[in-house]
Length: 159
Image (tube, rainbow, N blue to C red):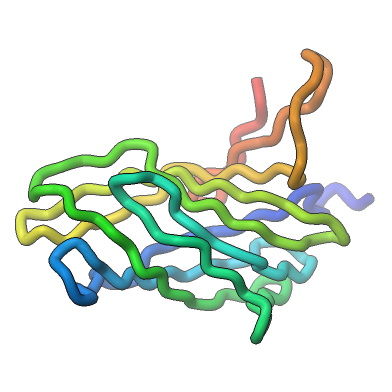
């Protein structure tokens, strides 16, 4: 395998613009840009945000599929629930993305910090993204741990 070939999927997740109110005061539509940083195609299977204070139900992408060619970006939107008061900070919210890449299923976790602005709008900032094979579970101290990819594209190797 060439030195520059990725051994796991690498993506950048960016919130786009300001979230838009979507009905009740706690309902928001948040747009996201997802960029595939590898030289292999990525198929997004589903995305969800399970944190109870910054929540979105699972979105499955099967008809039509959500494909990200190598090096490409695409946009999606999530229907979020966030009813926190202005000034609130939600630490360790996260997005879970299930994907197919390199002939295997992967789970990518994007750790978020969400700050609720004075006007009540929840603003997400991506802190880090990790990737691991779906079903992966460390069983011994010798099992390799996944690297952490920060949203700026830098990779923190496990220590």
